[in-house]
Image (cartoon, rainbow over all chains, first blue to last red; front, side, top):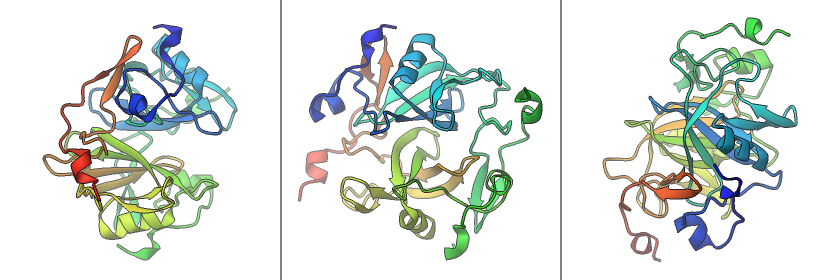
Length: 145
Length: 145
C-alpha cells in the first residue's frame, strides 16, 4: 500500500464525505484504535497509534500501536506471538478514530492477561463478572524474559 | 443500579482481576467509550464519558457521553431521537476503556450523518470506500432547530 495514503486534514466536508484518509492525531500525536476480531466482530482491544504506527499497520498488514507506557512503536505480537493481521481498516465520520478488523487465528488472544479479548468482564448489578472464557495462554510463560 | 458501583482505583491486581468497576479517567476526567450494536456486534460509534456520564449511562440505561466540543453531558438521542439502550456494559483489563453493547432499534443510526455506524468508510488501496449503506435519516431534517 502506498506511503501516500495518509493525507493532511482539509475541510469538514472532505473529511466526513470524502475518499481520502485524513486522520486526526491529538495533541500528543495519537489516534485511538479499536480492534475487533474479524469473524465475530467482537471488540478485542483498544490502543493508540501515532502516524508511524498507522503507516506501519497499513504497510505491513500487522496492527502496530504506539505504547504510551513504553513511549515507542509496538508491533502487536512481537513479544507474545499474538500477531493481528489486518483484514479491514476503517475510520469514523470525523476521522479521529481508527477501526481495525483483524484475523488473530482460531486460538488468538489479544489481552496481555491471556484472554481473547481485553473486555473479559461485564457489569452485572454493582459488580463485574468474568465471562471471557479461560485464558488462552499463560502470561507468565509468554512474557518471561 | 446503585450509585456506588463506581469505585476508586486500587492495585493493579484488583483492577485487572477484581470484580469492582474502577474506571480510569484521564487528566481531562474522561474515559473512551466504544459502542457496538448488540445484535451484530458492529462498532457504531466512539465517544468519551466523564464520571457523571458513566453514572448516568448505568443508572438510566441510555448511553450518555461527554461532548468535548460542547463541554457538557450528552444523552445520545436527545436531539436526534436515536437513543441507545444499554444491553451490556464492559470494561477492559486495565479499566481505562468502556464498551457498551446497545440496542438502537431496527433502523437506528448512530452517526450524525445519518448512517447506522460512524465507520461507514473502509480503506481500499489508497482511498476510502463508502460501504455503510444509505443514510437512515436526513441530518438536515433531524438537527434543524
